[in-house]
Amino acid sequence: MLAPITFAEKKPTIVALAPHVVEMLYAIGAGDQIIGTTDHADYPEAAKAIPRIGNYARIQIEAVAALQPELIIAWRSGSPSDDLARLKNLCFTVAYSQPEQLTDVAKELRYFGKLTGHQKRAEQLATQYEQQLTQLIARFSSRKSISVFYELWPLPLTTVANNAWPQQALAVCNIENPFVNAANDYPQINLEQVLVANPAIIIQPKSAGEKSKDAVNWSQWQTLSAVQNKTLLSPNADQLHRMTPRVLPEIEKLCQDIDKIRLKLN
Image (cartoon, rainbow, N blue to C red; front, side, top):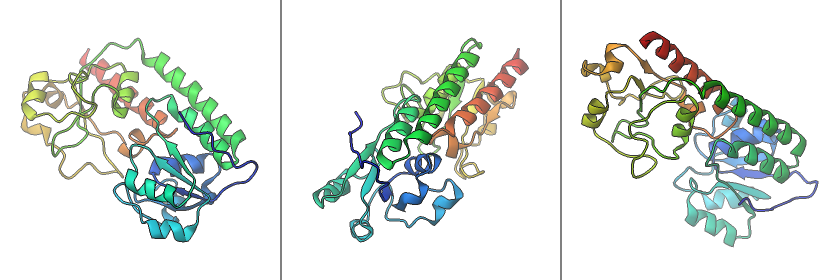
């Protein structure tokens, strides 16, 4: 449940402690209120100029105190909880972001709009997002299922399952993930399990235009259907993995690329 923090008509100065928070604040018109953020907050371009006061592992408490923000927006599961407790003890106002479902992006846009004095723009974006998501789901829901392996991380080899954010994106495209019922959302697996599953498509998301230098070289296993048919995809991880409106165009592109492979294999 998002906390009912309000600032009346005031537009507060903000320290935003996650890249997706920064991106959504800019989207609703609150970017110029951000006075501090963490590493990897790189979109839009203007976000790169915001002073850095830490990262996902540690917040520089003294740096935040020096900025004296009127509001801190943290990522509940992605910001260091001990540092957040210290900031609250120093009487800073802390609000939390915790998008878990694709639909939560719209909810958070509206929440951030109320927090920052940009409700009208936030409502417009939230409504647009909901309409686009509904259309995407309807568009690809009747597609024939196809087996896909998603290489989230190569070392150790990690994939997605259950309610993982990328798994929700894959579900929109109507795919079959052989590891979807693993014990946790981001299971570590071994190469032999992938070889046994023999997916029709292998997805290796890339960040900032480059695949991980440690990405698995699947061409070594010529028995894999995805290797034989050259059906390896590299979607933009910066969009697909970030909980913002930009995820939808990247999901659409991924679904379209999977559709082309369906046609190719049929």
